[in-house]
Image 1 (spheres, helix red, strand yellow):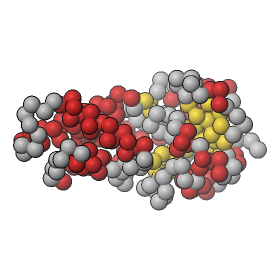
Image 2 (cartoon, rainbow, N blue to C red):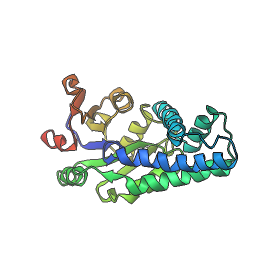
Image 3 (cartoon, helix red, strand yellow):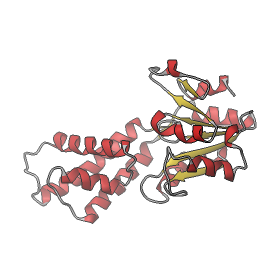
Image 4 (tube, rainbow, N blue to C red):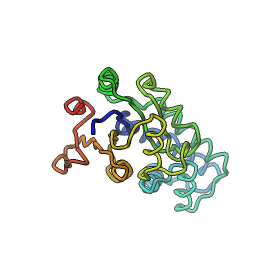
Length: 236
């Protein structure tokens, strides 16, 4: 069956968040570190780098488990160091995190060109992306990079529907909204563990961006690995 709808993940697929994610985490950590020092919850000789590494590793692990509430990240990481900070400090860290992230997130160089190309070819284009942990945050970030003119619909999984990827519900809902069969739908993402199962269960296909080229040999009829967004032009 011919493809009529292409759905995209956001971070790591349309948006290069490599710098944004690290610098946002560093900015939030400074808030937490300074508050811990003021409250004498860490010794003055406590190295910021060690403090940051604990935050970083804990947050990375939580993100892999699809936990996206940043205030919960901070609380979990701080608990590993025996630190308990007031909720307003955690909120302040979350605010500076997302402010920094939004400023530094950048579309990949090919993003606008490929979306424009697909739009001119007559494809419906959508975004399916997981929540940022608070309703409305992800849509604000998407609005910040001005790609909405290319997008027919957006599903923020965890906000708009109760289940996050890889559950098939977000994929089924976008097809319902755009009156498209899942069998006519392709999902483009960058994390096989989250971006494949949901669409395949509904009978669609997946394209996985592998910018390092380490998985290109795994391509098959249902899951195609590509180097970047530009490769979609050879298929559509």
